[in-house]
Image 1 (cartoon, rainbow, N blue to C red):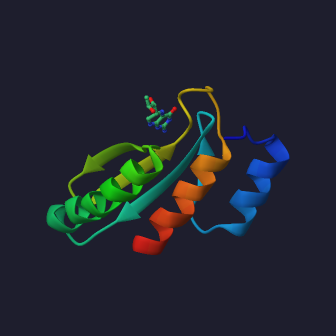
Image 2 (tube, rainbow, N blue to C red):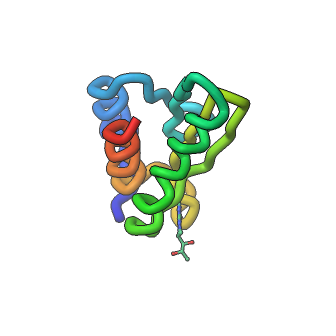
Length: 92
Ligand SMILES: C[C@H](O)[C@H](O)[C@H]1CNC2=NC(N)=NC(=O)C2=N1
């Protein structure tokens, strides 16, 4: 994995929809009809995250899911976080 520079992070944010920088993590808020759909979304993330061995921080508030991405092993944002962000966008 490769830690991203601030410029590389900015390029991803500028070219993505809904991802922001929060506490030095990539963050996006996803809204659903209800809790069931929110949980189903998280369940679709699970096999992707396990296959990558890279896992999101997730908060769920009824129909709102907040995904935060950082690489805990290096204490920063890496290419794995951007890769996972793109895969999560694909399954929304
Ligand atoms: C031991 C295991 O491979 C590591 O702890 C992996 C698991 N998933 C991970 N996920 C994330 N987001 N960051 C990590 O550093 C990380 N490390």
